[in-house]
Image (cartoon, rainbow, N blue to C red; front, top):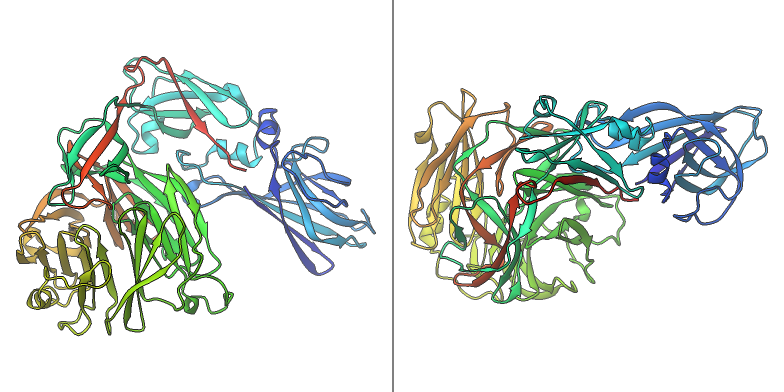
Length: 627
């Protein structure tokens, strides 16, 4: 957590930042409003997590609330408080340190030492402090009283917690719960709410505070299956799974090497009930990883990361950069971010263009490259290259360049390059052992199709075939190991080419619905809408290159900007809101960016069991507050 102090005095403004202390959650458990007071002092030193007092205190004052947000739909949780030192108070003292506390004589929960002291003159001094709490997955939107407690705007009353169970789609489902049970909040280091399990309890546990729904968690028990199952990757680059039931992929090894994979739904239908996530503003753009499991919300110098898990979007964290995000790509749980210097003209000249992250077990960690690109890039593609190796392709000044590196110790090494003239689209495939770059013009002047490493020739895509793919003047394309799809959203036409069978087909999307309105291409899927505010999802077959309707429904909104079909969730962006709904399915596939055709895979699953059926009589909602 982080807060900011702003001191206004004698016509000048001074800013400082704090560390949050280990006393934070214990002070909440003692029943205090932990930001009620702002303490100030004149000492010096380095704040420590376990030091709960100023170095040299001058005093503390009650802090008034001038702004607060406890609703996740409106963005970051925060509270803004203010104190004023009167004109005749503390004259001649130099204010050097500040901190929040629940009372004038209680422990600090934050501590800030200013980069420079502020001499108090005989005029008022305003001290404004902004206290923020990180977003937590499962906290429910609306005026959430639990957030007020975390922000120090309300006392914790353990007697006001209760719980119940439902199949949660909207906040109304929680409010409709009739049977509620007392629950107990324990452990002073994090919030652990112990809840009883009743017979026939549904999957979603709802925790209430003062009769307001505040937390939702999946209450099912994840029981690891004792033995792995063995599969062979098919010609579609997938492992089909029949009769899935309630399972989750636990571990995956591919040819005896550690793998990263996901279960993707074979869509039967889409739930009519949509959840929403409020965006900061309508200019934020969405990106979905090729394995369909990660959703990135991107704007300016920030990326918000979600993971699609069991029909929900789980918040993982927020990444902030010194420059504007120009482009991103993901492969096997690795994220590469490009920060072109031309997009941040006032940025530091020595700042690296590339950032590299890995996401393991829901945790984001950064692994810096030892070197960097020597130029800005127009497009990038990140791909697995066997073992612990990856390859990054980028287009700059009409040249496509491939750089290899180890994701264990990232150092870029030159591999190959090609002239691609006006190409602006580049995609790669480990399964196809290929890199493909092109523009969308009806010629071959800016197109190449080469082996993934070293630039060998590929014969699986002929010149006439590529010309036909581009003949519809596409405005978007999709490329994978099995398919190339081009789409023109204005003419409502698409061309699909199968690498497997060499079939190529022109698809007229208006044949699938009357009064067609919008067309979106996402991977193998077309999402088409009509003027009656209905939608259809089509899937293209990797063998026949034909499109078939697999689901339909009613739109949750108008004026759609982006659509993505994730592992088991449909995601729609409209203006400043994300709408998402569960995909309903009984069968599915295992997908991995590391799969090659014919690979042998060993998979362990977890069974998702009702807690009562698993022999338990209770469960817990746990919220860790990172400091």
